[in-house]
Length: 122
Image 1: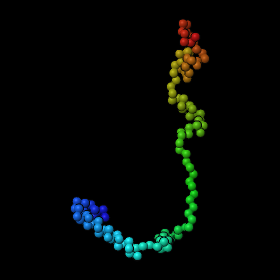
Image 2: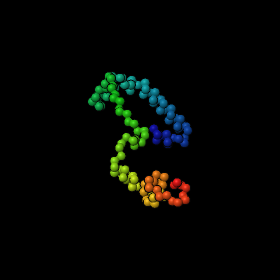
Image 3: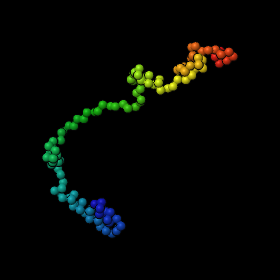
Image 4: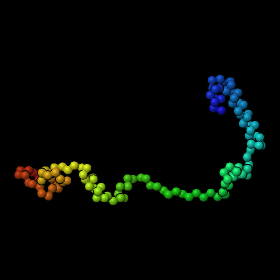
C-alpha cells in the first residue's frame, strides 16, 4: 500500500483512481459474509492457535508499589570504615589557636594559645 502511494504521489489522477479502487475493494470485503467473524468462531480460532481458551473472568494482581523518591541516605547506618573514608577525604586545616593541623578551628579550640594584644581570642 505504501509502495503504491509513494509511486503515485506525483500523479494526481492515478492517485485518485487508486483511492477509489481501494475504497470499492474495502466495501466489497466488508459486505462479503465469508470475511465476517462471529464471536464463537473467534474463541475457537484462539483455542486452535494458542491451545488456550479465553477465560470468562480475568483476575489481575496489582504489583507492589516501588517508592523511588528521595535519596534514602538516612535509612542506612554509616559504618566506621565509611566514616573514616569520609574524614580522610577532607584535609585538615591549621588551627590558629593551637597552631596544629587538626579537625577544629580557633573558635572551638580547647587549648587556644592567647596571643598578647589579639582581640579575637579574648
